[in-house]
Length: 277
Image (tube, rainbow, N blue to C red; front, side, top):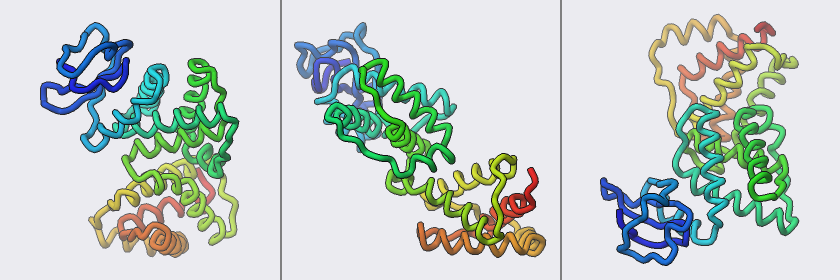
C-alpha cells in the first residue's frame, strides 16, 4: 500500500484494493514520508474507509489535531458501538473528532456552553448519555481536561445522530419532541404519566423509532385498513389524542403520519392512560 498524501506525521491517505481512498493512522507513519512511498505496515493502527463525501473533510480535520485525540475519538466510537451493539454511521469519525477538539479547546479557554436539552437527553436517551459520560471520563484520563455533563449531553446527541444517520439539527430537536408528545398525552387526559411502568418505557422506545422514521421521511405502509379502523373505534379517546400528535408532527417536522403509524401510537397511548404496566 502506497502513500497518496501525507496528512501529518501520524496520518496518511492511501488507496485500498477496491481503489477507494482510505485514511491510515499510526504513530510516526507519515514522518519524513512523501507521496508514492510504501506504508510501513508495522506502524498501521487504524484504517478509516469513509464515504467519499466525508474523506476530504476528515483529512482536513486531522491536519491540525493531535494523534492522541484522533486515537481517543476512535476508542470512544468503538466503545459506543460495543455498548449500543450496532454499527454507527461512519460520519461519526468526522463529527465527534471535531466536537471533542472544539470542546477541549473551549474548556482550556474557560468558555462554557450550557446544554439546554441536558434533562431531556438524560431522560429519553440515557444509554447514549451514559456513553457521553464515559467519553468525558476518557478525555479526562487521557488528556487531563475535565469536561462537564453538558458536554456529555452534546456527545450523546452525536451518537443518536450516528445511529440514524440523520441531520444533526433535526436530531437535536428530538428529545424536546418526545417531551412535547408526552405532554400532549398528559394534557389531553389530565393525568400524570407513571414513568415506572413498562407501558411508559415501551411508548418512549416507540417514539424514538417513530421520530427516526420521521427524520428519514419513512413510514409504515397501511397493511390492514379494517384492523386500523377497529383499533380507532375500540380506543376512541386514545385515537383522538393521537390525532393531536399527528397535527403536531405535521407542523413541527412536516411529517405526514400514516394510518398505520396512528394505529401503533393509539395502542401505546391506550396503555399509558390505563395506568397499567
